Image 1 (cartoon, rainbow, N blue to C red):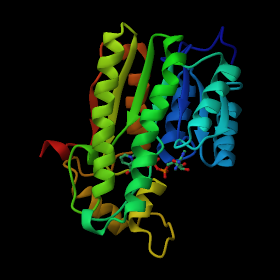
Image 2: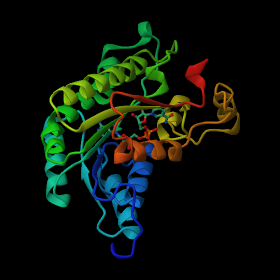
Image 3: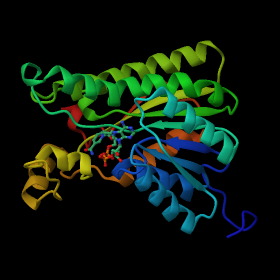
Image 4: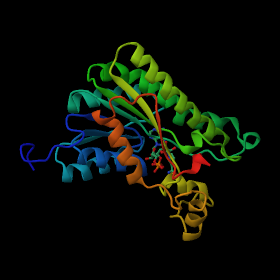
Length: 268
Ligand SMILES: NC(=O)c1ccc[n+]([C@@H]2O[C@H](COP(=O)([O-])OP(=O)(O)OC[C@H]3O[C@@H](n4cnc5c(N)ncnc54)[C@H](O)[C@@H]3O)[C@@H](O)[C@H]2O)c1
């Protein structure tokens, strides 16, 4: 459909970089953003998988997606991903810090390497990306930073010490980012999203036996859903709708906020 005939999208004119864009949530956000008129850079440490997601988006929305191989722990990869946004689409107005991993273990069972890996991918990456993307976002105001934290950043569990800590730190880093941008007079908002369990590969890692990922069984799904007042798991679509709102100018007075997509879990 030509832009002359296409209905206005909620993200027309926006240019987004989505990290972990080949994964369950990241690919869902990328597709939803393109459906609302944004152009999207799908970045992932798995560059081939990111290219596949971008190709799928372009099949429906020609020219709306590009991809890059991008390890979020690498400063040089960040610089290359941002340069790719400028080259492919002329800038960047929405940064979605979404890439993340599980780390399972109580604090005294967590080895230093596992702790550091979790902090590096889930937290340091958000600091790195925010710092390095800021000049490009400043050129493309109004701009929005969306950090995918977790309900586990707000509520602790006994067996996910590093994950809890990394996601809580992302929550607070988001607020600090929001306040500093506002103080500098930049129209760059920063907000965090806090989903509960979603049946993506990440969640499958929680139940993986011998390192093998399998779709959640009905019994596993029911066990998780029983912890949620609304009685079901969160979905990728639930997160994508929230991300569209935060990326769009509809949320222009919202900064430093957290959107809880937890079916009431943290209200208990
Ligand atoms: N699935 C859930 O239940 C859930 C709930 C709350 C929050 N989250 C958060 O949502 C985000 C996305 O998770 P998901 O469920 O889509 O998981 P996923 O495993 O489906 O996707 C994660 C993606 O991140 C990529 N990735 C891993 N390490 C990377 C690195 N160093 N650099 C760049 N990319 C890297 C992976 O290749 C993968 O494509 C994560 O931050 C996660 O913590 C997930």
